[in-house]
Image (tube, rainbow, N blue to C red):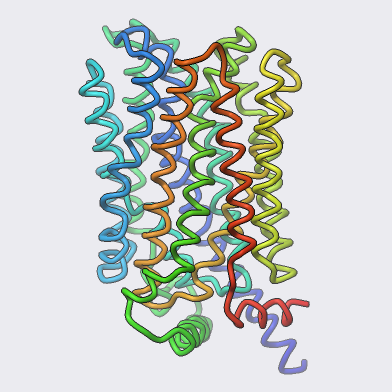
Length: 438
């Protein structure tokens, strides 16, 4: 067999083993993380009723998660780079699970605000840590598809979390607990359990992968080492210079605008659909989950196409414009259930598909400790949009009869996002990958 064919066969085999070993587990962890992050959207109606919270108070408190998240993102990734993913990810999951369970103790606006900040602090570092972790194991040419497989956890968490959350809310009054208290107690526990599993399942680096054959382990270590050395050679300079560059600022802005829309919509989506349909329970859960089925398929197909063509910017921009169009339609079809659900389906397809392709961009020009810090900076600054988006939705809803102003504001942000990413100048490495893929 020709040498090139042997090399291709080994690459397919080894990276296939890596993906089968790592992606399902970190995917499951992200499903649990996302459920814990956004289950407040399902608890909202009962919590607001029981605790007397307005839409503005709820929107502000829901978004406070991301202020806590912002504060600890960069330190967390730098610790992961030094300490290793196995121990650090286990610590993150165990602590966030315990804090999520403690959300059942909320008694009013002040404690609601405090617990949302604490939950953000506890979970900070999980997502950017996993993105960094994939750069240790998956080469750039395959990273959009691998990232998309990992990030399909977000729509899957809605498909799973919607019916589970609605079922838990029906336990209202059992053993003296409200339905929303049951929701936080039960849905927080899996993170604690997975944290202990992570200590045995995750492997810090390829050279420690005793689940690979020795020859394959050596080959993978050398392959990823060459890619890392190439990035460092092409992008020499201080960590500070890399993190504070104009490209980093632009990527932070792009991710911020996408996150404004992501959480501005999702943390209000059950409420919007409840007001439009009057549905409750599993029927509401089914309607809420519908748009995410399409988003799930789109994420994988678009990520695969981006890898095959080697192109990143136009994929992200096209997805952002698609999402903006969906939100604009939703603003004008709030009283037509079928068209409203179709509009949100279009918006979720665009917003969710952005993620896998977007996170393949930063490692193109960041390596080593700069990659650890840079990915965390983008995620932490970008996730401030998770505070702004729900706050805008809550404030505009309290000032008007419907969600039109909030939806159009988020749609405008997505249009700006698409224009910004098109202005990004990527280094020659991306062009070379594109030519090689073609």
